[in-house]
Length: 324
Image (cartoon, rainbow, N blue to C red):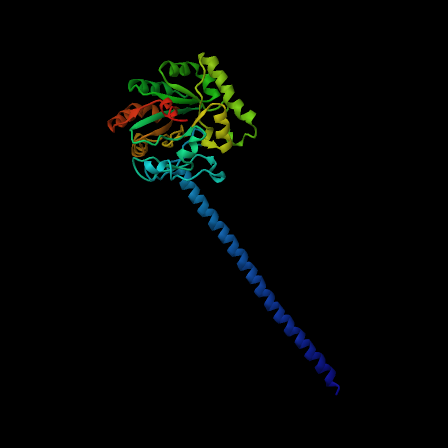
């Protein structure tokens, strides 16, 4: 009988140990399940981020990123008849960097905003046409000795161009600006300080960037600046497009460009021709940088090759004239 209390205690203790072991096993399973859930969540998030980043690169890189200062382009297309109707509608998620996608040689690229959509803001990136016409544009943030040879080539081919300038260029190279005007080229507004215009919070700040350059241009040349605007770095928002239109501006993006802005890593002649000949298309707005040594060296031959392909060169006035 003395053993009974002991046996009772032992049995009770055994049950407690058994419950503890079972609880511990359930806890381990719960912890394992939680770890699996966290791992799955993190893996899914990382996978989604990787896919998004890869897609973003293809969407904005294709034609190779283009910038003086950050402009980006890409690679894909569906043909000119689709270029203005099936390119996708601009939404808040599309705002930011101008992006292109080439899909077919000799056809306009698909952009992250359609020609029809941009038209309501008097904005353009190409002309939807079968006519072999090209619109040459140059972005110039500073002068490094290549603009004179570019102007020589344009003059030789009687090819009008638009030079989108910033305040620094007008301040430091007034003689070249005057030569552009004297030889029949257009000078466009690339803003005074070259900021990310999509981040300017007020209409006043946006207007000041354009108006200050207008004033400097008139002071330099004695002429009124043409109201043609190119967003710095190709960055924009719907609000920007609206404000530019309200100021009387046409906004010009581009449909062809290549990586030509690194002074210490210039493309070879062959690399330049591969991009600029292979991706040219009727109605293209071509963006080149006047800071590119390669562009200065090849422009004469490039214009010749485009002419041999049946292309002619026209001023942006011709394109803008077709806008409402």
